[in-house]
Image 1 (tube, helix red, strand yellow):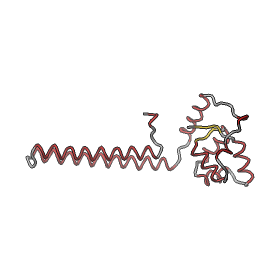
Image 2: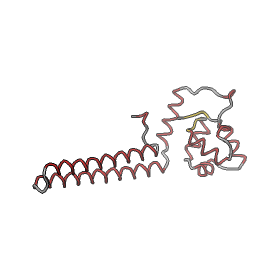
Image 3: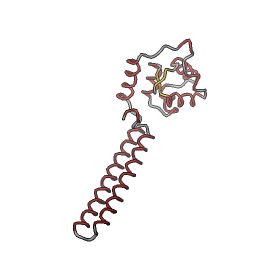
Image 4: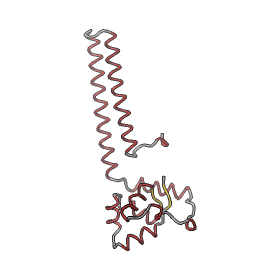
Length: 166
């Protein structure tokens, strides 16, 4: 969820320490583009606010606008900021995690295909009876399902999928 932040305070604290945007973004573990967007649009996610506050050694609340400074974000401004964030830069760790999850999915699918192929082949060659066929088929299907659920959970924890988007 995006929140309004006091961009002037972030910029002021950064400049007091004689840090460039690049230096602060690297120390906070966020992309340079994200920090530029925060300082320009005064909008950031909770994780970004936490990261910046930790580097600046202040409480997160100090980066939020004061009550008299708050002007509600229009939904079009918020959605525009979110679209910019998604379109312009995706953190490298998300890209690497997506690749890792994709490869894992391919391995999982290949394993299930080989497992099902073996079970069906053994059954067609009369090497296993019908009860064994059903048992082995269910074991392969269950293994695939557990693997897929684990993969989906990993993607959820990496913030690549969200229940609200489903």
